[in-house]
Length: 469
Image (cartoon, rainbow, N blue to C red; front, side, top):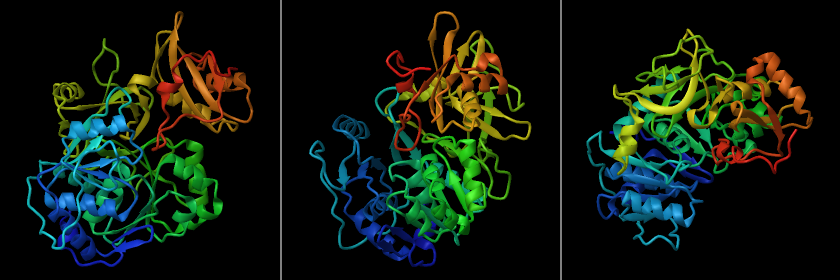
């Protein structure tokens, strides 16, 4: 059972804290059991995943009842929300009911039910992708997959029942909900959700492990007083987007320890991570977690073989292991396309791997593999070089069609010193001339989603109206 330690372990006061709400382990089991008793059928159940204790109770109740749960982002628009409800086949709703949703709402009963035994391979959670290349797809995560992913992290991060996890990440995403909340419930440790990932709230909360995304860590780095308060932590974890090397170093200096970076997707849970007791290297996400395997294959259609583990050659990252999803709901075509004939999942990400097995993610194959002048170039490598320039605050690199080069490298940069030629020369000197940006566009901010990932599709649109250098 995914949450065995929650229902069979010793009671624990302040097991879950969300803002000002506090539940012991037994109180959570009672409330979740009463929620489970009110579930009208076999689901799935759509849960409006606001940062509240009600969300934690509802998700836990669904898992104890053996009914699939669909975490719904609170900011979902009517079209996206209608798609998720229709596509998932949700039969009931938990939370405030939007006008566009016509589902019965769940009111917890007076008497809790006992946890139900279900097959580990059964879908426990349906998490919808961001939909950047079409309508969001429902990722089917089984209880066995979630358990395998979490158990691997317990080993990689030396995570014990004595830990207290602190974070303020969204509860509709794998990072915040599965790792931050369900990980703590499965391990038998405590979890504190700060409602919002504000530096002062992180600093004011006693914990041993703090979870954040680069945007959160950047705000903490800009608040030295809050950053210094995190010196009490055992582990600082960053994910969901690459952590720029200067920010990695700033966090290390302010808190006294380098952050642990990790890599994963909704479809894969976390498959690669630095170790709590091992090397933590700026710009690199570490080694496969226990149970996971990775390989890097040539992204060229003319050469489908593996690429060398030299720390430089870019390859298409493929993974396999028991923590991977079962498939895309109702999309056998998309599911089949995502897997190779020999059983590896195509992540769509580009990476390099050094002889010791350390991985560095350099971008998405669809947007970050730039074919320019006959060369295959990873956008992430150029971004890392630009971030090493002292004047660069943030950057995103894309390739746009060019009649001569095939694709032209354009760097979108946030910097107080708007001298594009200096940055072009910096990359040419640090990497090579064929990897230099052919154009630098200065912006006041980069478009990002809620998890801090840059929306490069917006940047790769025609740039004729943007400010150029």
